[in-house]
Image (tube, rainbow, N blue to C red; front, side, top):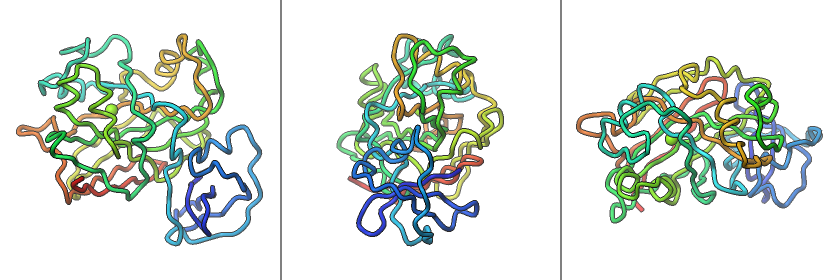
Length: 288
Ligand code: MG
């Protein structure tokens, strides 16, 4: 089931998106917090009744989790070809510099970085001149847990969405820790909606990204170095995962720093990410 969060009739609502992605059925959930919690409001509850069907073009989409309750967990260097291109770029300040990591590299982005499908990615040239895109499958946790085993990990997943882990490469390299370079305003486009876990086959999901129509990233989640159960087991090792936590699983090769010279984002660009079975996340790039 695809579930979208959107503004309609003056309030934030949740709705079930039709298979063709053209209409949405508004669900009877008169909850004020939807504008911040989004689909997390639904977790653990029976699906509310349908109120009305609306054309998706009529509503203003919000991110499926518009304001996560805490930082978004992210995995770095999680596809072999991307690990190589990043290590060769000169910006890799991670402890696993120059190598494929032996354990997941986990960092985070501030919750306020989240923007919706269609919202601009803002480039502040006074802060960074090396802003890059990263297409990623993101996990939305449904069942809390600590020390979750790999075997049990997928039972803690509520659903999936798409995230663009936008990154200021110069800041990522300069500060050694990645938080600042990853957490600039507008640096986490998310959407266009969430898909429940029962509809997703993690072993074979195409992940593609185009910049202005040019295909830059073209891979598959089957090529992840650390798969989703391994990531969940690693992050929950002593940290209690909570319902509504979002985990970005890493980006494949083809980011801007992988090119010589690098192809960083510029005002006027358009970033389009397509993840099989989930949808398309497209965001323009604007000067701040
Ligand atoms: Mg990333």
